[in-house]
Length: 216
Image 1 (tube, rainbow, N blue to C red):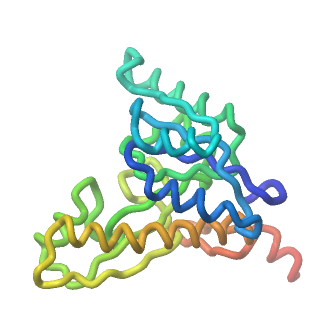
Image 2: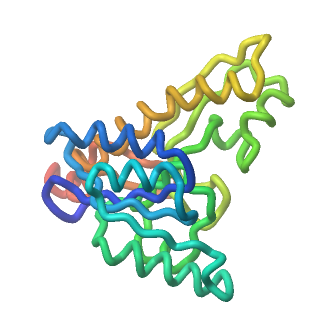
């Protein structure tokens, strides 16, 4: 599912402080990582992630829903803006909007997101709260491909985090985010360097679609 030689072009979608984006920027400083961030796009103006990207000399854009008459028009504008940067892979790094079909259909299997739970457990916007309320003893984070559902895409990688008896939402989420940053960097790095295949809901990292043909 990769279509050009390294370094691969990453477009990062953000909504907030940019901690996951920063982890990707740091990793991309090493040419062996196999990718570079070419643009950062936000759905909100003035967020810290955009400031970090601008300070790093990256192209930035804001596609705010409030500037468009309806959701469909915003979806088209977002896809058009992403496409202007010719990405190989799109990474949602704390992007707090569901992506519409104009983006999903143009880059199928090439949009990556993270979630602060071990999917399919605790999907949705309140995963950390729900894990605590559900009495989970172990939770964690998931890196997955984005599809048209809410946290329903094929799973790329997961990492577990123990839930402590005295955990609050804030303390648990802080530990999850620390693991999440490393997991998405490692996962994206493997994807851009070694490729990946999707069969149904099963993703295999480090295997390109033509590997089977070569072995035959």
